[in-house]
Length: 242
Image: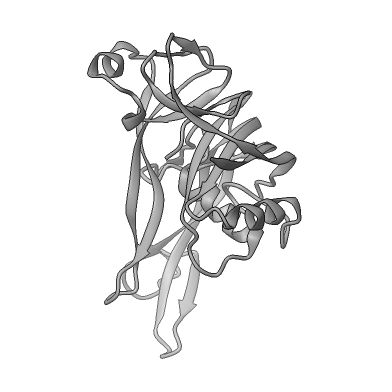
């Protein structure tokens, strides 16, 4: 099976957890949906191209940074309660407040991403898109620039680990890769996340919703991946596709 292997880095990045409000917390690695969105932008895709993704990497540290948070308040604009007045086309005014808040940033991010489109004819298109993107690439926030170190097409093959393996970097490992309940329970240092992957548009409300979310374990570098785990390999790295 062919895959595109992307090696990249970021100076700063934030992959926001949707449930975090007061402080915008970051996932330790970018979600599948974020990576897939970056690929679509790089290639100029106008329709969704289905693909499986493996995400591994590391970061040096976490820091907090201030940003301006805007909040809508119910009722009409009142200068004693609101910072900014917004007027609609109908002439109705409402107010919002602005104030400082914190966002969590990862520093010196290193990423190894494998991409396997469902249709093999998309391999070359994605490869060329990442080699020569339509515009500068970012991952996370718009300002979180992505520097690509290497893009190449590799062959990956399915296999089952015959012995325990220590990870070389952090990784998302889908729960359905882990063969037995014993293995699932054995390593309690991992964190389970439900990661967004694919969204749909509601036909009546035209509102976006997540139609595919992946349950994964986030394993840190040097964590043990137990034998019998179903994985792929490109000859250099393990590949945990979801």
